Length: 282
Image 1 (tube, helix red, strand yellow):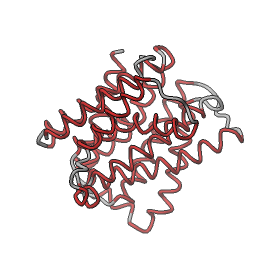
Image 2 (image 1 turned 90 degrees about the horizontal axis):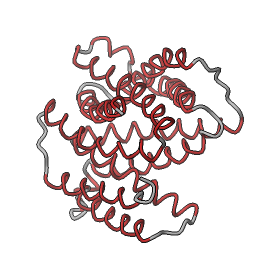
Image 3 (image 1 turned 30 degrees about the vertical axis):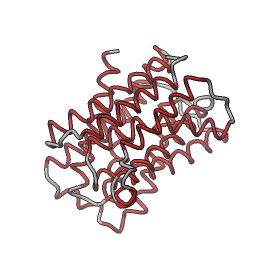
Image 4 (image 1 turned 120 degrees about the vertical axis):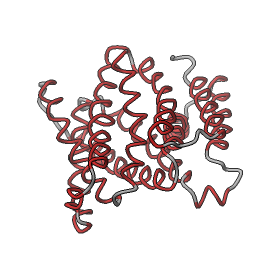
């Protein structure tokens, strides 16, 4: 449980690290180095796991689809944080993603809603409306919040794919292969942008990049998977309620971002919505 709390702290701090990076390099450069370092960081974890990596045809479709969505998520989060704040991104994406996941499952698989789930979705829509400032639609379309919404929708797809992939491939192997594929793709795409330019960056840049790739991705994700196996997915997922809190506090401490009222109100309603949606399983 202690390690799980730390993994939520790492995830929360990842948004501030990304904000630092967006001010110093282009998305094509950050994408490649993030996935490259993340892939290397997985090697000691794989050695500790000591299990052979087996990729079947059934698992390949999940890996390839998730790789595409992961790159899309990273691009959207980059622009969302670039034009917005780390605290807002950490709250909006982590609270809206579970709601979008449930909504996507409901629409695709035609599952019936019970009373708590219906209440949760209504609260979630209200929370999202406040959180994304949809009362000013022109601000939404031209600002960072539309990228945060893209992130929530994309991550809902990643979540559904990962849940089904666990039947065919170990979750750590799944994450590692996704990072390898994403590294190759982003290298091909970003090669002409001068990937070697990172070697002239400041120490602050490298600390943020290594933190984001190693602590906020490889280590935090591995802890989450281990905890899910020991504590159960329902209990483990409930700890994600800590991520928005950590994201806002770390952005306030490190980046001096103000804690805006609509973020607190919208984020709190979204957390309440997730609670109602999962009330029977938590």
